[in-house]
Image (cartoon, rainbow over the protein chains, first blue to last red):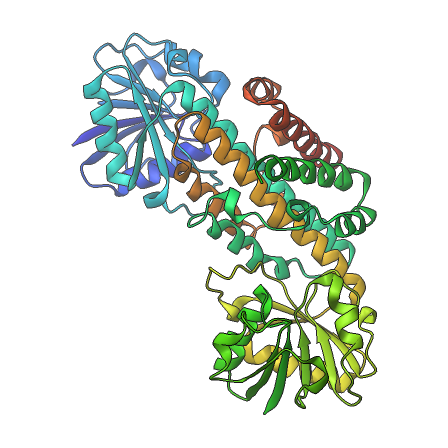
Length: 254
Length: 254
């Protein structure tokens, strides 16, 4: 039985993590801390809830789920020695943990919203620790909730985080622009749902390099010109830059 | 029974369309034309194949699946009066058909590769015709192969095509950049597959506007700076422009 304490149970990651840990075998969620009680009140019948960092119960792993900026400060207040303290951030190095205890990272690579149910079993969990036994402990924890566990160091995690911004945040913004164009022309956006899904599923069998299609890759100047003429200033800037980047990718290699 | 003739069966669209029409009830694929026989030879046991545009068999609908640039020229050579002639292009207006016969469009909004099996039932089919009975005929045809049929005029179709470039071609290029960052840092790209899938499926229940997350939306300058410092010149240009565009989207509306 691994005893877990969640530090910052009121945020999105803490919320989803508490839910899955309560359902997991071989895991005991012994306590959830949050700065204010209102957001974790709903847990009080199933585990201990607290707003006092100085009187936390003894656990095997303390999982810090607070905002990136608060990780150092919160970790400094955790007065344990032979315990494992991990944070869950993609962009914060392990060494930013300012505790005396053993350090590690337990990064769930998914975009969480409280309103949306999460399929934990497929979420990649990127783990890091200062010692091999701690890495093993994190691996055991990861494997109880997901089938995808990776050992990723702080340097790699930083890069992974920026890569995720491209394939998640920026991709969503392109969906937004697609939606914008549809709305302006009385076209239901749902027409684009199947091609969006197909584009996302294609790269599970082809590399993105091989999956690329379209006028930019073909350098089909006539279509590119037609398209640019239809766009707003901001849309056109993005269109031109991405077209150029695609063209350079293939122009150089073809 | 609707009698169909495919003009340009050697390309990706013609290939997939022939396959699905041969399987469909109430449809008779009576002939497939292509400029050269080699690419349609495989069909000769199940339908008539030809390279002669002047001796085509009589069909109810002639579906032109040739390259955009060749649509006008090919349509001019089709000497029919009371037949319906349609093209399948997203970016070519219906009036570009230069035939005496009735005109229409049958645009399948999906990205086709010969190697990849297509789930036709979910592909949106955008139809247009000069007369109501022809629109009805195209609707009947569309409904035998897909559950998603939309009446979309040439102006809308043009816009839809450029919107598809954003959500398909450009999105795939962002996947390529994500892959590039992973490769440079010895990170398996598959770690990003689940977040890619989740991002694509989120917008079926949320608008892209509501689904947006990340440092650009939060205007989290510290993270934005850290990210920029890790990128190549080209990646950074894209990062900055999309970040600015996201920021403007929410800065104005929040």
